Length: 352
Length: 136
Image (spheres, rainbow over the protein chains, first blue to last red):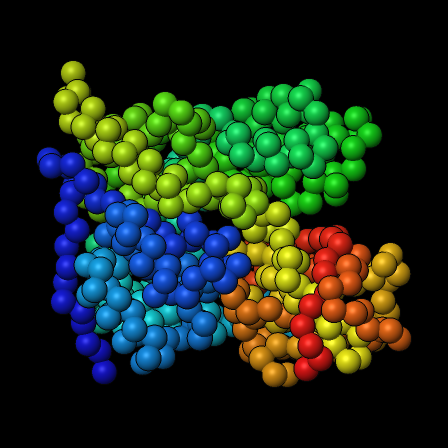
């Protein structure tokens, strides 16, 4: 049985642009994991702060019966969405290929596991599924299911990759061969950062790195070598300073694979295929700007490229900051202001 | 502590007739299959507890640490706590402070590097916490 939610449409963030606002509940990971809210309570907080209407989830984080949804969950979800006037934006799938220890999933299991999530997404009224694998044979098999459930599949383009990285060019080729409007990208702004986020630098300082170490990290980060080479160079540097890389946990590597420094202008190369955006950010400074991500420049690309869809706010500071070190709800509100201000500026500054 | 290195919280220590229960948070941003837990190590007052003495409870079921790898069908939901039960000759009194260190190793099942090789996360958390709660 497939039933469909009445289609609700979010208003543009600024009249004259196709950008709509909302957030991914992932922004509140720390509060969620700490058990501060149940799902209804979390949605109440989002509504009270006015940071909808687009709601995105990471299914493996939000749904207790992942990868499935129960009829009770669907009913409660729909009630909450009706009550708040929210619009489902993106359902984040995972492909847990290594669920078993004795072997990886077979292609059939990968297909089944993904289809289960597609059905969950549809039951909850989502128009789009974020996918993490773009293996051509899997994509081809999933396409009829996406047709049946009226879903768009968006492969997430995330740091350290950019629109023209070799791996992404391969996916673009696969997309060109299949040529379906149901295939596209979820653009994550982690790809196009101009600096490392102060949040991770603060975390690494707390873990023992000194100013000179942080400067060397940022110098290596800014070079163009691939992530393994840059991470390797930094590990080598740590050894020369007598610092055990293990003392930094996974954070030294995360510094490279969560922060990309591709030119924002490259988004234009795939703009018609961008179906959803993870408006990644770590902080908002006293001027209302994101210290490491140039929102005005990025938004200008999206406005000029005629993007129509959600900017789903993704505050990822919780990967480096402690619970209660920051208030994600307040930060998303400020980031929405920044996005609106950037759209208005882009609309009044047409290309010459 | 951030998403990837939070294991303990202020109310993690539970008094148990057999010793101590330690309630663990998933040290990651999403729920994981119990098979994703590669290792759990516990030290109490600086003394490492042999793995065979530990029991792990989730959703009314009890496992040995070595049995976790087979539980690919059991989800450790991010809002649920995995309770590690540590046998102690003298269980702590209500309100007593105990120094505990817990290390959890994860194998992230959706982040494949090569066939059967996945990105790992190593999370270690040491705190002095107050034991609370009655025997259950």
